[in-house]
Amino acid sequence: MAKKLTYEELEQRVKELDKEAVEHRRMENSFREFCEIGKALSMERKIDKLLPVIMTGLSKVLEADRSTLFLVPWDQLTLWTRFAEGLDGESISLDLKMGLAGVCALTKEIVNIANAYEDPRFNRETDSVTGFRTESVLCAPLVNKLEGVIGVLELLNSKTGVFSREDEEKAFKSAALLADIDFSDDAQKGRANALVDDIRQATECQRGCVFLLNKEKGELRSVIGQGLGDREIRLSLSLGIAGLVAVTGEELNIQDAYADSRFDKSTDERTGYRTRDLLCVPIKNQSGDIIGVIEAINKKNGTFTGRDLDLLKGLSSQVAMFIENAILANDYHVQFMSILEVLAASIDAKDPLTANHSQKVNEYATGIARELGFREADIEILSVSALLHDYGKLGTNENILKKPGKLSPQEYEHIKQHAKNTRDILSRMYLIRQYRNVPLIASSHHERLDGSGYFQGLRDHEIHFMAKIIAVADVFDALTAKRHYRDALSSEAAFEILEQGIGTQFDENIVEALKKYWEKQRSQQIASTG
Ligand SMILES: [Fe+2]
Image 1 (cartoon, protein in one colour):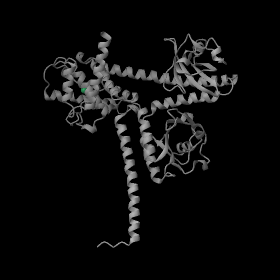
Image 2 (cartoon, helix red, strand yellow):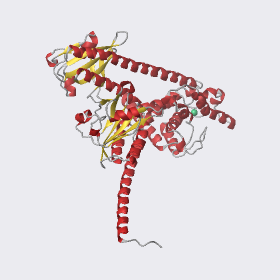
Image 3 (cartoon, helix red, strand yellow):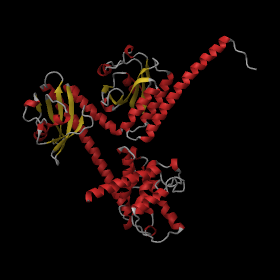
Image 4 (cartoon, helix red, strand yellow):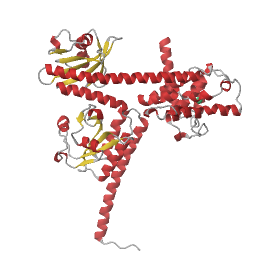
């Protein structure tokens, strides 16, 4: 029999229950937030659209006023904001050796401070820039698979006053998830931003801008410019100060731009910015050729001095190195892709009827991926996998490949071997980190959602999503091209077959995306021929 409670005990129990209910509601709310984040993750692949959702979600879950994601370009010893609530998309960079986020990055440990202004390691500078008053701070490191710190998740001002142990745990787990996101494109952007920051700091100007020279087109193209957003500015070589510096290679210090006839006002008119004074120096590569120009615009106090000019010239060699590295990396990439294309073509050449098949599958697969909103870095991985998907046919008997009639069971088994061969051959290739899944993706293109495919008989969730894309692209091209055993089908007939396979063989969203891509291509073709 239950013990009879006294009135006091009863009152105590009610209080406890009340507390539990409040706690329960809090947990329910935070669960709902996590669901929202999950939903955003599944629908949106573009990181720039995702991050705001994730970060504001994290602020709510951790009951903080603000959250910031910093990335750490270690060669610069800075932290720069990849996303900061309340900063309106503007990016700031901070000295790694100053501030609590820096402490977190350097020690790889959680930093939980109740009152920032009482901590000597706190950097008050950011508050003075943003006008925000920091009280409590919680920082968690983003640690990647190689155990390196790539960034810091920072939460400011707990609504409950102080961040709890439980909050530390949540922040730690969230940071681990964020560390899985590939920010490699951004790392490059981060270094570029840091360079422009250097330009602004060194010369104490409002705006720094780097232009790259395109000799063939006779123009300068802005590659990085603080405060310009993602807008690209193109300048003709025959107009303006930057063009003049790019052509002559002589630096210029313009004290009053609008009074100088060489200054071209049209860019200001387009962007709504008012240039007062500017410094412009050429960027030269190691052979002394001009590859671009740097501009420092609007000195904060007074006008630019000779010392500013020397500082900017000093920076231009760093910028030159940065640009040359980027060009080199791009050259390697172009070379890598052209080798892959030749390899793919050599497989397609085994049979004249399948000429261009790999290239076509690549085109459809990347078209599908763009429709689905893939990031460029992921499209690359897909593209490499698509080009090489049939590479295992290297070991397939040509007579069987070209056989016009029905295949015998043994012959079919022989053909099926090519998927496994693709994996075995590609696994022997040295592929850099981001391409490590290529052998798996390429060799899974004959798997089916219901598990009846080959060579592993994988089921829906076991099949890499990119392999599902290649499967659809592969079948679509096979159906719409002539084969030894039948004529080419119309695209309508091919889509009908794909649709029949939805759920058992193909993913519905992928088939839909291919349809959209195909329709767009067709209307473009009609527009260009009509
Ligand atoms: Fe295949």
